[in-house]
Length: 351
Image 1 (cartoon, rainbow, N blue to C red):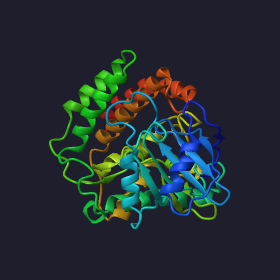
Image 2 (image 1 turned 90 degrees about the vertical axis):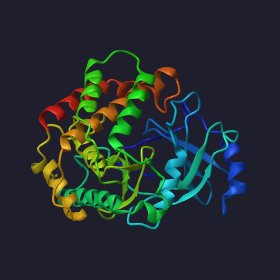
Image 3 (image 1 turned 180 degrees about the vertical axis):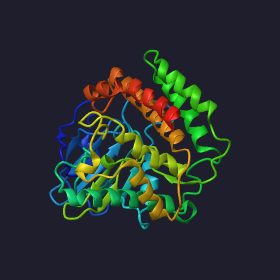
Image 4 (image 1 turned 30 degrees about the horizontal axis):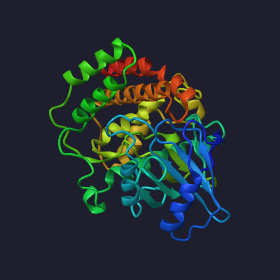
């Protein structure tokens, strides 16, 4: 994946046994021929991702981290399954080649997918994009999200991809457990946010669709020649849930500070840059889904801030334990746990 502003580094904290991968692919991947080299992408804090290169082809391998992991985390098998299921839908995904669940091969489960050449925009201000194209890129972003939420899970074999019942209640309970399991110190704002989410939890949400779980512009690969999404990445948190959680995830990211750490739009004059406001993006999404409005977005926004805070706490814990994908960046990202928790409280207060 060629990326805007990204760097590819040699294997670091997580190494890859290229000889073992080469031997496995020779047997299990039709058309594969070595020799094989691997480079590790520096972005991403969850499942280490490598570009595999041979004289004739390029692939991407995504693996579980080695070492002791939180229960149900780093589900590469779910990532593989949902992307494979979406291959013939209107949702752009990379083509899946194979899934290996045998830990004995390289020490953890992994999957191999096609390498999608394109651009990843890590700065939503899109500084390297001409102003007229910025709106088109965000329109594409809302259209892809609407397409995902319009997929019938049963029609693509994903009826059982998420348990029945209240999605946010289940997710809040799950990520509260994950947060407590990776807690490294008391954060009062996080404790208060968890309590308030439980107090304001809706009895039943109603609508259920496929959800990505971490939908944002830097989890998308765009064409170099047109404002078109070629693939949505990082499906680890995907399940069946409420679509407003994905929509709120977009807004959540924009409420962070701009720059390489926050990757947000807080304080940015969006109109001057040709970028949509929160309300405009939501309206475009609703139009593409043929729905009139969304309600209680503040609650779902608070939920997204909470879940990301819990994710970042896990990243921090793995960095301290020595098995983060990028330990230095993992520790830096861990500093944002309290920031996300406070913004979650603000979302509940302001709506």
